[in-house]
Length: 573
Image (cartoon, rainbow, N blue to C red; front, side):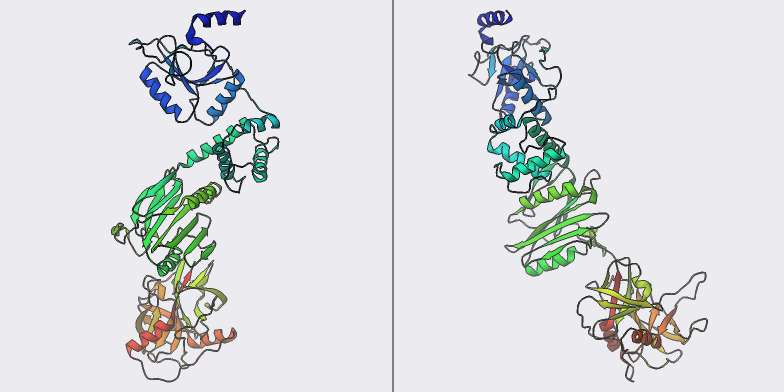
């Protein structure tokens, strides 16, 4: 009876013809025809089934459809809601309130609306919503495969991209649902507690894409076209913000406490420039010591990992320019940043632009910074000296306590062979031939005679050791200790572990740190372990100490050269 009545009404009102047996998803309603037409154009860029009808009271509805049944309309509504593509207050309607069609122009039921609505439209109509609660629609594998056939290539590729983002798919994005894609769909279903069929239902596809869109929205992934540096790349713009130029870097600092940083690298250069950058990057705090290092002729990668940060750096030489990027993030973001890194690698492209040495703020530079970035500093830096032609080094034991890594002159890694009696013997990991090594004095020095200490007084701030002059005050310690001698010299903390010379250039001892616990010694009072004790320590560890030949005093310049060639900066990391 109702159908007969509705058919009669529709025959009397031609504008509602052919709507009674169909349903729509209504997304918006507007009091102005022009506003409704503008919004219809916007929706049409994303949907092919956008329609617009005039409603009673002078309002204009925008809808998607029509769909052959309420269930089909509900399914579409749920998919689009989950994807955040349409307003959350969108709903399913039966179209009984739809009158003349105004969009698309010249199509569908009725003619294009040309009338002007009243100046004060009636309140927006409250069209009845067909579904009271969201339907948990799902499909059998057969139905899912049938709905899957309606997907175009772009839709299929989008699903592969989402599966790849979450780590379920690792192959090529090609829109082909082969064995690998089916297996990844099954893994996604399993991880979400669903029946594993390897075929995603309409609802599951919507959920996957919604989760992917939410992940991207949180990261704010966007393409950055840095013309000045000649780099284009997709990066997590929601987590970082531009922080300026500091040659050779474009810096992006963390945003809203994300802990994420990005550097873009751009400079003219050759293979020497690339090799230099490879070494320099490893001195920065943002490139932790642990992690893979890979250097090729025209590119390199650096991975750094510690308890605070993780980073990845890539740079390549191409067309006379070195360009690359660094991604830095906290360890807890490792999973999502792995996906971000993959996207950055895939989208990294270069053009002709490049940074110049004048780009940046010179006021931000200091000895502890490189291009505005903090240099890695050792826990402790002291001095040492070569004791044989194989590059083995003696220093004080305190210089190498609790180190995860030891370097000599910031260039060579070394292992602690032994520590004993306050001394430490270091062996370089790679073959090393020093320019000079210690020849030890075989006699006790004369009181009040001149001596010199060679050491890195400023703990590596200077690239070469400093020679400081003083006098031998006593051949014993303050309490009569025969193994040490007392000096009067203005040495600094960084000099500790360095060689003590007599004026012939023979090593007469090794400078010790003062134990000032509970007492203050007169300024300039220092102590050194005697050469005889160093020779004994070396002998016990298989090294014969070279004895110095009797020789006249050296000129200051000659002593400086001899001291510089054998003195080593010992850094504990």
